[in-house]
Length: 336
Ligand code: PEP
Ligand code: MN
Image (tube, rainbow, N blue to C red; front, top):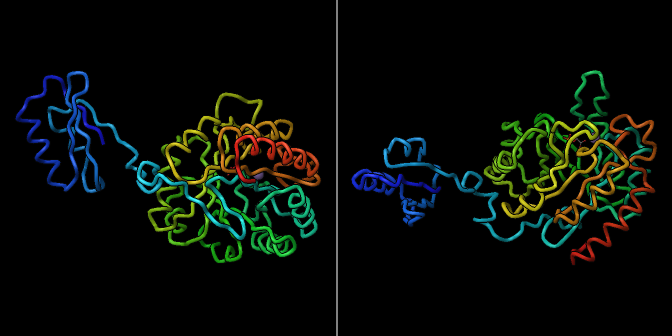
């Protein structure tokens, strides 16, 4: 926390402020900034009600540092977090690709797609079973049966699996799911995040379509604060005025998140764009921007997909994308 004092601050009020701050057992450091005094406060800041700091007349402004997401902060934990899922390492110097259909539809569909994305080099299989659809009349997912079918594909291919949870009461169904996804719509479902913080399952947390990077990190903090350190962030586009794409991929968030946090940062070019024709280009851009992985929707029959067919690429397109990802990883010196 940085407290900037007014240039004409009264010495007695400044010393009262410092005395008040020192009561909270935090470290206080003063410096001069362009003729005004700046006080840097570090330590366990949660105890301090910083709105009270403003009551001291000498205070010009207060700037929160990353301490509002202290467990997620790279400032506090400089080394990259690496999450092991099955034989796959996520984060660090690794680039991992999650691929699969938006929704699990049938045994044949998920097993077919799983085998082809695996052959192309995908590390993890995705498939939605509990679907948070914008319309209540749209396909809502096969629910627990979908998880069972995803598990069948895992047994067949050996790939770890990821699927979305929309309600904590469904947690028992996720016992054999390697990574639990929290979708954009639930990024600020704090009660869900708190409960997932009590598990030790890796969580793929997607950014809300109208949430800032700081809000995203604070949502991750909810999970971390519960003791679950296995959090993977996923940028999936934010809503803007543009309507030729479903969302706008916030590519800047990737290198920025990598600076602000030690957690692995993924990106989802499928939901970010909503259109299969530009998904490969965006996936490569995410890789080049420093993402630790991408999540791509792949379907063997996009026209007849139960959900998100317009943004799903075919196994052939995915195969050629993987070759290009490999080339970018080689340039970056990343393990793939
Ligand atoms: C999904 O991954 O299928 C999904 C619903 O994504 P998002 O939460 O990013 O919309
Ligand atoms: Mn989808």
